[in-house]
Length: 261
Length: 276
Image 1 (tube, each protein chain N blue to C red):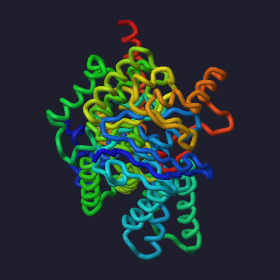
Image 2 (image 1 turned 180 degrees about the horizontal axis):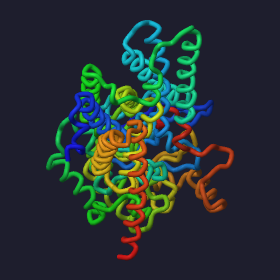
Image 3 (image 1 turned 180 degrees about the vertical axis):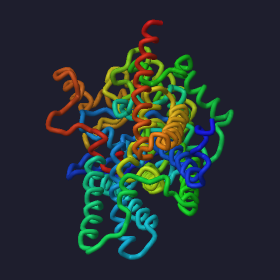
């Protein structure tokens, strides 16, 4: 199966608001797809829909060949924006990354050598093995983000979804994240990632989508950069300093009934 | 020396200590999830709601435990359902449903010309009145909750920390929440006779809140919470024998003292860290 993700005419609505309006795209195995667009353009909604956290109102969605909610546990790893987590939770970096193994564990099963090896590999690949015993409240923003990406890698998923992992992180963290993602993609893992970083799309992605509730442009980063849609977003960034369109609501977990606590 | 072991000589006290030990461990370990999910209000809520079940059981000449359990579980599941489907905050949902259920109990009771249930023991607990049948019920329900907790500890932990990511990874966060709410409802029913409706929330919250001050990892927090729970419930009962005080109130007061000591311990630890 070469198509890891296939969306056809996907419409997602909540609170009377149409967040995605007829989105059609495919992501192949071993491909990194970048998603850029203004705030409120449906980038996070797109990832949540692929993750099975939101149900489309209409359209057809196949993730790894089936409905995302009926996939075997541990198939999809999703890294949301970091601010939604309780940082006072009693957990060290190791504890958080080890949670990535939980979807694979049965009741009463022990955390075995393979689990420990997966956690150590994930920590090591993001250069945070030395932080394993540190409480998560005592991490910098970049270290927090690496911890969450490490948890996703420890899960050994068949699809990786990253929601703006580079926002607010230092250059060292961004380099580490890019290196790790490109290594996994080279190994055949399909990756979908939203970003506001328009400067490095060539280094991150094999394909790029410009989204504003609909797909405005799609192709290789170079093709999309050459398109008018990408240029209009760049213009918006340069003019306003960010990508937010004020008439649209922020994308936020609390707006999605399916994913509230 | 004889005076110190005097409380253990009576069969009713032996049953009371066994009940205190069981309730202390159960409430304080379940309380870990209550604290981490910010559900502190739920113990109070479900305990009050179970009052309606007691009245309904009385009116239908049923076992009080069954009436209280059914209403407590239905209220807990209702809280989860209304919170998720109605998109209403959890504290608001708990507040609405528990007062509604409690009012139903008062309404039904007020329509009776006489009411022969010992309400005071349900409101404030009477651990000294725990009979052999009560003790077996407490042990049986506690064992069932403990087994469910052991089976589900990973989904419970993951969804307590990051329910959205857990759900995306294939763990059913919604089902896990409903199971946890059911476990909490049964925990509260188990504890009712020991500490009563009014004080059960304290046993659910205080030992775990004290442990939260002193630990930075989940398993040590749950373990320390269980230690505090046993210390307070068994110690409180023991003290109440000599002080000739209410056992439920003594248990909760001891837990409150442990909580403040743990806060002081945390301050000392932070200060020591700063110095080093």
